[in-house]
Image (cartoon, rainbow, N blue to C red; front, side, top):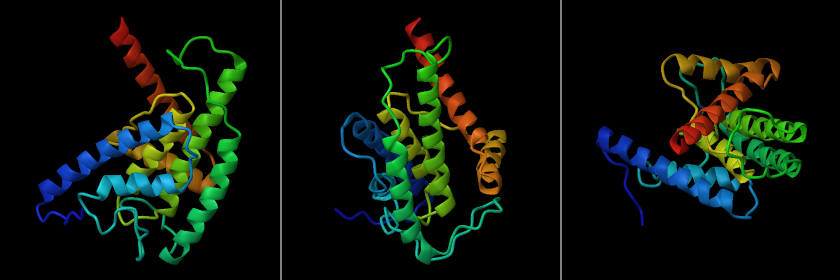
Length: 212
């Protein structure tokens, strides 16, 4: 079924919000499956977000130059997007191959085995890497950040961590953008990894409080 883009901005935002919820559910179901994680997951996530809000761009590569508001990063020319996404997929397969699913974790703080700490670090790094790479390539007209954050959650959830919500409102937005720029300029993933780790701590602490 084809959905026309709503003319009303409020309805557009409502449909995008519902699409994001559906995409989150898609990620959760996919994470619990044994299907391989590939770049096609990125397209499926993006398509799910926009198919009822802005169907013309849903899962479709941009065909125009792009700029990012309040960011010095100039995304690659749209003619490079397809090749860059193919390269992303190749590296993603290599990175995922190095990961091992953790046993189900009920807490994220406190003493952990060194082997488990190292694997958590690897999982978080791959999530940060794919997150940044999608934002850097900026393959879609809109919704790249949302697709990147949900794809990072797919990496986390497939390997038995909890999906997170990265806060990018108000003062958090500057920290988030700065973390992405740190990777652009220096290849330093630590600031973005720290944001992801804090998100994990928040989620695990929230679960423990509900249980108590």
